[in-house]
Amino acid sequence: MAASCRFKPLSRVAVSGGTHGNEMSGIYLAKHWLRNPMELQRGSFAVTPFLGNPRAIEKCVRYVGRDLNRTFTTEFLSSTEAEDEPYEVVRAREINQTYGPKGSAQAFDFMFDLHNSTANMGTCLIVDSEESLLPMHMCHYIQTHYTRSPCPIYLYKLLGEETYSINSVAKAGLALELGPQPQQVVRADLFTQMRDLMACALEFIELFNNGTVLPAFEIEAYKITGRMDYPRYPDGEISAMVHPKLQDKDFRPLNPGDPIFQTFSGEEIPYEGDTTIYPAFINEAAYYEKKVAFAKMEKHMFSIPGLQRE
Image (cartoon, rainbow, N blue to C red):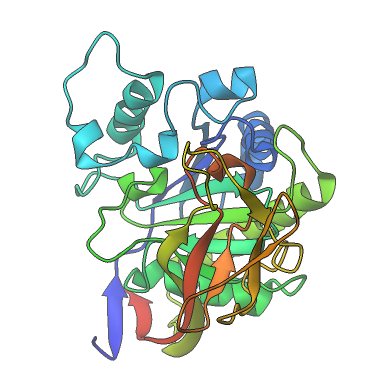
């Protein structure tokens, strides 16, 4: 990578609340901003809030047909309209047309995506990969200036995988994942934290647009390597639950031999991997249907080059 990279200033920024219709901090923040748009506005760029999945929000469910946040791949975005297709496929194409198209010069410069998790994720910052330079600089700025809690960085894209999330339709993006918060519930503390994180991120964009030179830095981030399913009976039913010693230990080291599951009769099942990993999204309610007990992460230090506006 070059010692310092140049990016055009950002002029159009979008914020999605309710990509999942039962994650309430983002939904009520987006609704608040739609009523009070001036709170988001800054001198050098415009911010457009929107509700990601209105039908799911209305029913207070994650989605009505399929997970919207897994529907922004070429396969879905370029598919022809069909009568029986899930609502989220139609909605993904609408969002892509409005804020993209994905990969095009016309796409919005940046998109934020606001989420809650039932897992103990704290104030987590989600980026597709460490190669996304502008979002990594934004994460570094947030970690430096938002001091109320640690803000771990989760790099979600597996090697060779296409980006699939809603903010991938913009040129760059960042998801905020705050938890633990139950589904279908809004908590004032997490709502306030999300609002403050957004204010911090928008402050970063304003500084960048106004010509602040951002030096190179080293940063710690957690990169996904795979996902762990629950143990199952031969008929497919779950045969064990997350072990009490692992519960709520997101981003903490998990060593070979540490207990990860407990059967319903009380037996421990240890982690059989060869190396220490860092689990995240532990016992996430929305991931039971996806057959994911937790995401397996490795912790890395990355060298990020400097950045300045063109």
